[in-house]
Length: 281
Image (tube, helix red, strand yellow):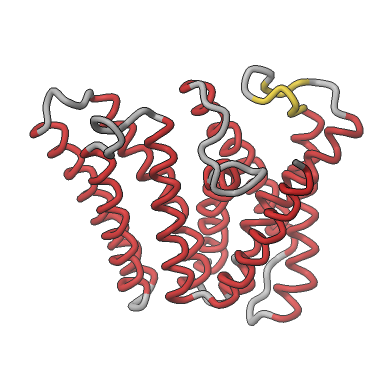
């Protein structure tokens, strides 16, 4: 089991590195495909489906709007970040209206909680993941900045695990994740702050065309780590609510896309917002 998990993790990291370095259309297409899978995993977990094995209308609507969303985002991002934001708002509003149409014209086949879960899944998966694309393509020096997302998520998780194993005694959320400790969480936050500071000093400030204040990098790392932990626990909470072990079986030893990218999904927006603020001011 450990060997399978390790090997699939290495392959996953290698693919992620290659795609993020290349960026552009390849990144948009990969994120679109990953978002489609994440959306299906979330809606499956939330029990949104049609009769038999066929996906229900809310699922189909969400998949179609994910295609529209990434198409519009890719076209708009080529014109500038402001156009990309406008495209995001328009498509999110359109998706909400589409789900309302499904609710009304398919009534009473789908309950209100299913429609709300479908919209939640659309925002949680496709929209949140798209911030990786915005960070990589929408901001100058994005090829250097996008790695902050993974330092905030996977980096802080590694630090939290190491500290938790060594000195973890107080359970943080025993009902959601019994193995996570308060000490581990603190170690993850401090570890991410250190990782961000080191990366900013030796990579961003040394090789990119921008200068990032080290105190800001530390604060952003701590915030990113904290938010990524919330994302991890939120994904676990959904699984607890619907009594499932994993979101899927796509990644051997890890589960589904949502099992592996739960923290990345929420770390991406906070890193993007933080970098955007420093770039703007």
